[in-house]
Image 1 (cartoon, helix red, strand yellow):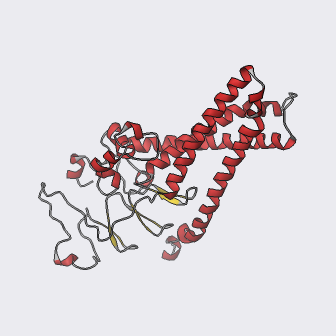
Image 2 (image 1 turned 90 degrees about the vertical axis):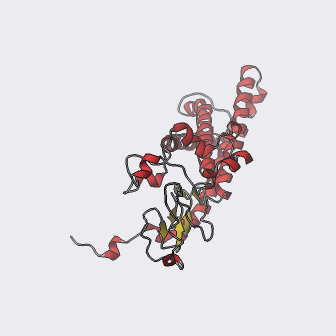
Image 3 (image 1 turned 30 degrees about the vertical axis):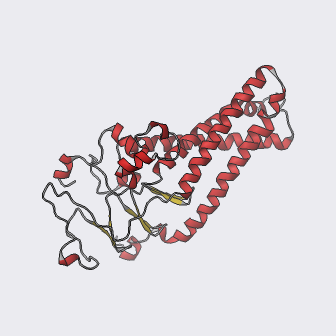
Length: 307
């Protein structure tokens, strides 16, 4: 049955304003879950256990120390994603082609003296929504209303796009969220089991209800984040993004896949001291242009094929 172009062109992102508003609510939801979990672990269960002495004291102390360390790293990574711009196209950006292979800048001709209406060179990408040229791996975000460097996806949980400049922070947020929720799930498991048994559960009914809810929420987040984290680890290993992986015109072989080690360094940098914190060393930022999101090394053999 024939469908009109108006129907085929329907796009869920026409609700972009609503999605941005939802993102602000999601931040409050994240903080609410963190607060609920903190109360269940620290105030309702393992904090009071510090006064019991012996093995209970050592166990509680170990859980609380690890819990707070992971919580600090989780929140640090989370707000780094929220407040770090994913990367936008610099004004009047122009691509630089490989002069050694005989390529000339296709934008120096008179036909490109104004705003280009039709780009004939397949290596030059142009966004008709932003009316500007696009660097490699750059995509337009309908929610943000702009082109984002090495865009992976728009995440309502962080009210921001995940792209070149904050992708590492997003991965660390997933990593520490998985560790934290797994720790909370395991630490609250004895209390959850006691809830369905005849065992006595210390605390008020409100504390018991909070512990039960915190266990269920953290278990759900641990399972969901685990799958999401595994997916993004595979994307980093192949040096691709979520958009590139599911793009209809993508090829089985990624032109940017330079081996798992170099692929990893293009996201996390070369300085090992900074791998597990949401920041880059000044030396990495200086010697690795790829971290700026504008230039990406690729395989010469695939470049020659025009892929």
